[in-house]
Image 1 (spheres, rainbow, N blue to C red):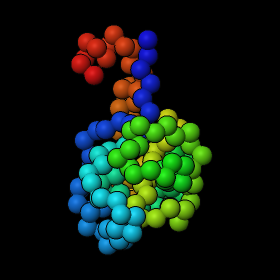
Image 2 (image 1 turned 90 degrees about the horizontal axis):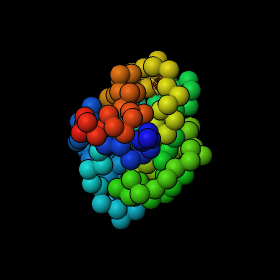
Image 3 (image 1 turned 90 degrees about the vertical axis):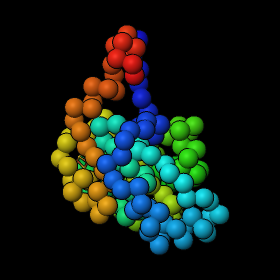
Image 4 (image 1 turned 120 degrees about the vertical axis):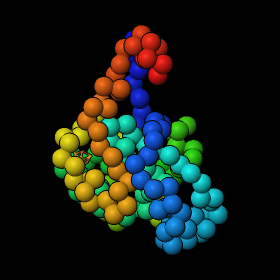
Length: 152
Ligand code: SF4
C-alpha cells in the first residue's frame, strides 16, 4: 500500500514569517472586501512547500518556474483557503503572475512532482515563503508499513 499525498492538503512547518500576509495592505483589503477572516493557513506542499501565511500573492513564483509547478488556487476552486484541505484540485487553475483572483489568492504547488530543483521560485519570492527540499520527496510515497513504523 502506498500513501499518496495531495499537495493542497499537507501541512508542514513553514519557512516564512507568519506575519507577512497579515501585514500586507493588499491582502488585508482583499479579505475585508470578501468579508472573509484572515486566519492562519499553514504550509501547502511537501518538498515544494509554500507558506500561505507568508504568501502575499505577489505571483513572481508562477512564471519563474520552468516546469509550471504553481497555480493560483482560487482560479480553480474559489473557496476560503481554510477549506482547501477538503477540496480536490485537478490543476486547471491560472498560472500567470497577475492571474490571481484577488490578493486572498495563494500560490499552490499543485504539480510539485514535476520540480527540477532549480530554486528559481525560492529566489524570486519577496517574502521567502517557499521552501524546496529535495530530500522530502521520499515522504510522498513511503510504503504504508514504513509510515506506520515511523509514526507518520
Ligand atoms: S525549484 Fe524550480 S522547478 Fe521546482 S518549483 Fe521552484 S521554480 Fe519550479
